[in-house]
Length: 282
Length: 260
Image 1 (cartoon, rainbow over the protein chains, first blue to last red):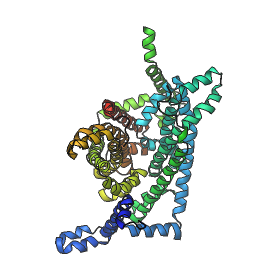
Image 2 (image 1 turned 180 degrees about the vertical axis):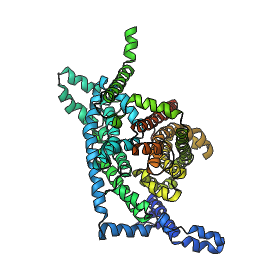
Image 3 (image 1 turned 90 degrees about the horizontal axis):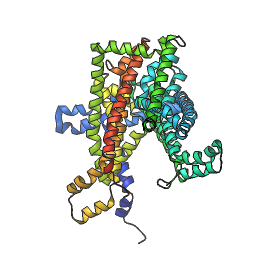
């Protein structure tokens, strides 16, 4: 009983093994297309038409090309750091502003019915619009600099934050609110001790959605202008057929997105106990 | 009785009044030059531009291009996303193999791939089709998958006990239980698809409503920009309203207490 058979170990880690092999197979396929392995391998079978299986690296890059380019850009020339700093700065300011505006707005609309009636048509309309369509308008108003990009990130992020904060107040246990008002608690006191704690988990979920949205802002807002930023780096590399660089930029965004959403998910889990149980408030 | 009716429609009335106040203030601001109408346009200017463009064949060509991109990209995402989501939910090993790719694609805004799509498919309709497809397919896969996973274990056990074939189980238990989730996914996906159209056309295009907005922006034709934005707002509202209706219609099919 002391040694488990290889078959057992395989069965227990099936998920990891299959996932990792699929990923490895993908990388090998990719590298093979770019280096013409498949073309050479299948040439005896397919003849002339096998040549279509060799795809020029300027179209698809290759895993090794991307790895090498990342190493160069991160460690040797360090040229990627200013781009990351610029985009990160925009993200922090835009997202921060969205939280500062969206949370109180949503809480107020959740608490005061009339205010929610006023806010609702604007919120629904903005939510249904692909907000990036405002981009040319913002460019006209404030140019193509830092603040334009902050504005688009803000607009993308503020909507899920407001909507979640609004929905959060609606889930507060009405019994608690009734008790508070019976005992003459002030509005501020009620907010601080009842509404804020039970709304927090929902607000955090809203922030997680907002992070995803603001990544769209980073990429799209940097379509305009020609300073630094990850989005601009991707666009310029794309325009000059520097596909390795494009993939490095995409990879940076993938990793940043995964890190931020996972980080927020961890915080969310930490506060999950504060979430009022559904159906508990009758 | 009148009081009741008034009370019932309070949300709509207050909302409409707020919208009306906003529009009047906007118009007034432009008329009395509180802000330069060149920057903020005004509701009446937008209306007159709308009337003008209604007659313009170029505008209808833009609408046709954008709707073609939207409809075909979205339909392709449905055709691929639903079967893939069902397969991932039903076969554990398919989920293990494809899960990592879907998680990664879900973590990044798919519009990031725009430069690569342009490189592969050019600046015509195909690069937009690809980005619309990529944007919409992920939410459809994920919610279909979630739907399959929440099917009631009791039913599945009964089906198995009575020796139902996989096909039969699938048709009579999985599909009805999954339908509401699929429609939720379709609703999210429509927003993503519309975003793909806008970004694709802002990025590089020769036609389309997004392209029209970008060009009007460059020429400081604010009225046209606003008209284009409102057109997208209107489209988004119509599409989400229709899909929300359908979603609600199928809501009764949602399995309750669904844990497996």
